[in-house]
Length: 492
Image 1 (cartoon, rainbow, N blue to C red):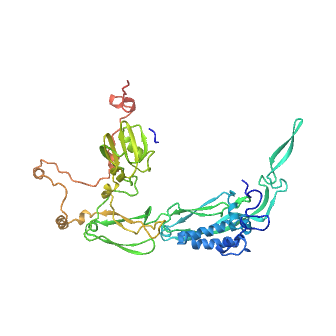
Image 2 (cartoon, rainbow, N blue to C red):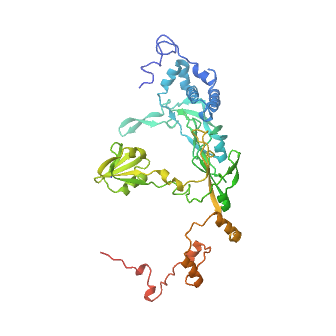
Image 3 (cartoon, helix red, strand yellow):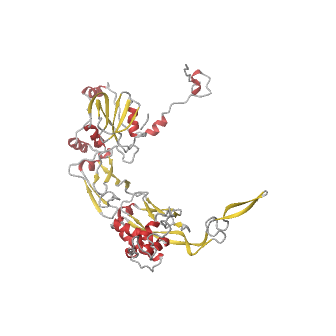
């Protein structure tokens, strides 16, 4: 089966004319003030002051905090230039045009670092700001100097005698280790302001650009902070939905009840059943291995959907193989809504169920398999939930998932079910099972029918109490020579 140049543009600085100072090409003076105004700093401010101003604005204008994405990108672009000494020097002389041309030079970036931050479900529900302390290596720029031994080249030429000949050999400079320069660095402690957005999922990453160790010949690496969700004692999370478990009595399930709940943001909720509603036990486990409903397929004999886009095809006429390929194999999550088998070949269609049905055409000898409607089995999965009281959505915190309640029914004990209580229950809730026949009832009185009574038994203990006896391996009789040695295999 197959399924188918020179960074200076010709010897001069960008925008540098023969007759004057920095300006744009064409002679117009370059704007070398705009980016300083964007960050609210002056040309005389040092890199630390500019960086601090950027961080302050970033906290205010970040989209996750309701800021304008366009303005956030504007301050990011300004920071990228003004916090880089080389780009800033070009900007101060040639404006953004000159600095942007320097961006074409791919700068080396140092290795990043990873860290994690553990958040409670409450913090993820409401959003929070956390302060994290990290250590990083910072280079003393004043100490940067070209290596005296190699002149900043990172390599030296040495003469080596090889027999009667003398040959020049290039070797890595042992003074600077090939770096071409020497410098001093210090270990510095930084405090990062980590903004945890509302609804952030477990594993969500917050990136701090160029906050890892500095390197002498490029940009510092990034710090990647990963959010780890701490398990909660009451709530359990699945995507943007929340679940909690509650045990209720049979009368609560039949007659209704009200329960009080303190939500993750501290609000008090009074959750009530609708009048006349009955809570039924459900076997569906949203956290189980079969939480995803199995795919079903509708069969339409002598039909094809030729107008629907073909995604792949294969040499097979086995529908079970095709179903496996669509749900668990190569075409899983590829949007296959139907496949058609005809003449020993299967053609897979990239479409929705409705598109396949609309495109269906009578075709002799073809069999069309259409993905079943997943909503058809929803009745068996319906659970009681409070709409809109789940986790905020990361993409839109004003929307929330649902709060599901997993109910466990607590049945009355034998002592609680008095004859009067049984009679009242039977009057309100008739028996649904098929009653015993009149002959069976009469047989009980005459002794012709054996009466057995249900009791409580531990199936685990029962299994171990009734394991088959193992024959004695040392027994001399024929019955004792069982086990693996007594099994004969027919061979052809």
